[in-house]
Image (tube, helix red, strand yellow):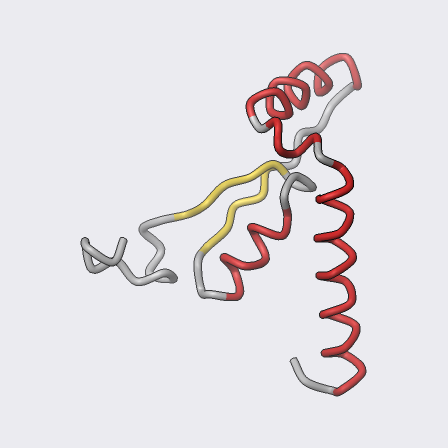
Length: 88
């Protein structure tokens, strides 16, 4: 993007992820001005489970729940410390 002179928030590049998968990446991109698209699958379990299973298999690192939980807890603590200090 830098080589092409594209600014993070000019609307020509979006990053997309399934809602709830590796949200720490989305939060970091968003904090740095990048535009994020979060996909939210909906429907019956029979309809959505095969899709979510494929996404999880494609992104095996998502299956490391200990790492993901630590990242989520760290993000939560960061947000709590910001809200308690009054900074936004």
